[in-house]
Image 1 (cartoon, one colour):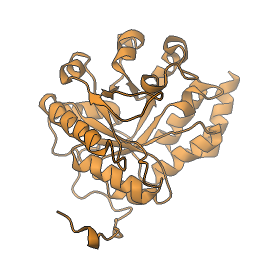
Image 2 (cartoon, one colour; image 1 turned 120 degrees about the vertical axis):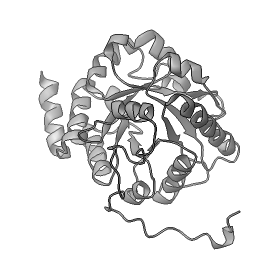
Image 3 (tube, one colour; image 1 turned 90 degrees about the vertical axis):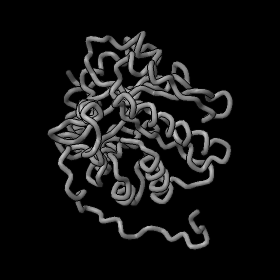
Image 4 (cartoon, helix red, strand yellow; image 1 turned 30 degrees about the vertical axis):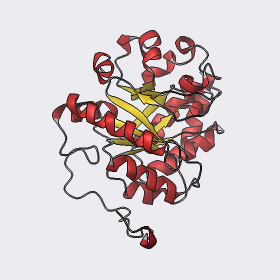
Length: 291
């Protein structure tokens, strides 16, 4: 067991130094199976190495929140602009047309809702993920939550065990722990725990010192959009995260609650894949909004 009396905070993160001898375009995936690499290549563009994921799985704990009242009306028109769709199996089966032909990151754990205490979750049967031909499974970790930390880490571990059998990658989603601040030390710890337990992708939040979080995580990091921000601020968030090493964004409310969701996701896509500035992205948003 680690000696907690001599726990020293990391300092040598090698920010800006590429991963040594990496041939495949997805970080940490060089030694994975063909099936894993194929699915990761659907999610992360082979040319840019990045991804714009559209998250609309919020209803599994929040119900028909603003912007998600009607998936067919609010979300379907946005799907063509995303690289990957993140949703629950119920929405996938009822509201995502098979003809969309986009990779799916399936929300693969569920249990409690906003009406009770979050994070008391169980994971989906792997055969369901296989039947639905998903490209990845997303499992939440509650690092810093004394009651549910161990259970959610076990959920991730079990999902990785099952996903490995069928070549399905797993994304670890870091929830904010009750006893830790939203800073690089916490997100670095949570992200590394995800990767150490076998996650192939980590979804976490942007913070000061984010470059250290990314450098110390041996798999791709995508950022959560979090609460709704003004459009320019959301684009600045994307830009800073990408420039500090993120492999993409997994945005929900900052897209589907935008003044013009279709214009917003296209602007986000350009910031992520074409490296345009936030101001250029905002001008693009305004131009598309007029049409």
